[in-house]
Image (tube, rainbow, N blue to C red; front, side):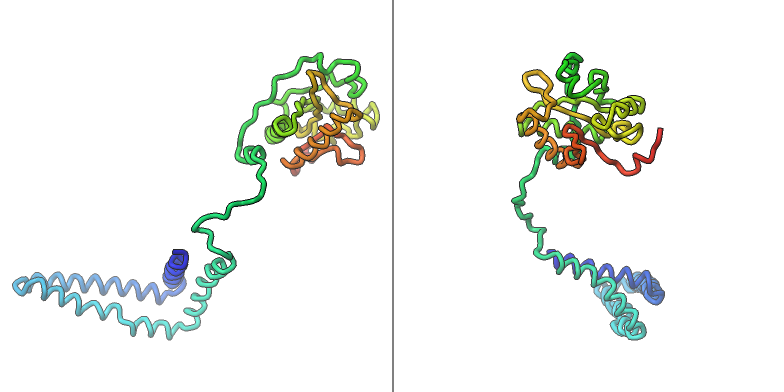
Length: 287
């Protein structure tokens, strides 16, 4: 069937190129149509005059007229006069389908090979447009303990509003949360998403151990970054000294990178809970 389709394509392409690129071809077809129309008219008239002789006489008249219109001599004469152009047109329309046919290897139309590659179904759902919903907001007290304040100063006043973040980044981050929960057993929480320029400058003023990015030098200002951590027994776990949390951060980085996010755990100044989506041209916007 595939070979037949290639042949039909080739014939149709030849006919189309002949009509498009060769004025003589269009003239020949036009003349052929005109002569066919005239022949049919003469045949009908002849049938009217010779009705008494029956249908056989009319059929014979049409049969005698037809060969003169589809004469092999006409076609052969045309091809001899335009041999170079005919050969060029033949190569033009035949090479692409032949290359595609032979370069494609084995024919796949009869059925597809079963893939042995392991598919991450959750990432596949993300790419197919599954819309995930942000988790229920945690009580402010979760972020206000003394232990958390030592790890992340001023965290209690940070924004965790998912609506202020870029929608594409939000969906990828939520997919990471889902995979971390379903495949690795880690409940995750967002610590800070969108960050205002004023807050960014204030944090930068606290020293490089907090952040070394000023306003509009961080993806947080564009809703394309977030800092996240883990929940264990209803409490926030941020410290990298906790082996369970550190294992979670490593898994978090792998999952985040698998959905196209940049993970802060690979930076010189490591930020294990940080991910961002670096969209082209965004950082050029100021204010």
